[in-house]
Image (cartoon, rainbow, N blue to C red; front, side, top):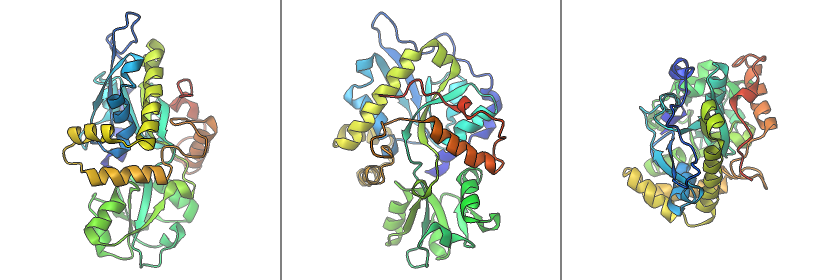
Length: 331
């Protein structure tokens, strides 16, 4: 499932010419519904629950939008879909994706962040003497290529980890289960549960966001051209999505889950239920007390950029505000 975290670097050149065609979404004065195709970063799951809830509850429709959720997957490239005008809006999995686009001069911005905490975790065996992230120093850590270019940079800077600890993660937990000294990456809402079901033990789970990792996740991406041409559609989508996320977490979530199961028959009700509870208990969507759902701040983006640029990921001359806009944040 973590293939969705890919940084999608191969599409940056294509995206540089990203321009919506004349039929791009526009909220019409006639009252006719505006079509918005929204591409997610993976197959339907609880991590997309707020968007499905907004669809099921009519939150999009009440704002004059006809929304189609376009499922992601291992062969789906969200920035490329935006570039080709196959969708009007897309999902950005993590802050590195958005900042990479800004570095390449791609005219795409994050307009909202529906996960205040990146759900990324490191997972360790419960009986291996690992009681904190610092205890993983010198131990093998299974990481995807995308993760090595992303949160691994932060881990090395904070904990003194080294590249010789990295082992190739192929989205299979078997190597982790076979080596008690090893740790592996995952999402707090996914891999810990599947490992527990598969191996019969509860792994140690360390949510990077709770250790200070400052990145956002599950952002809504819009092209600069769409923002300029039809800001009303962007604003309506963000506000409806925020309503959907509030309902998905505070209500029973059944309407959204039904649509998720319809779109993704491989998903199961138990996986959805535990993921939704993790979203709530870890405050993945809500973040700090009182923070509006979907919010972003200049200060938070600066913290992320400063941490990444200090490690040479981005030139310090890059303006991080090229990656996002606060103009559409829900109230």
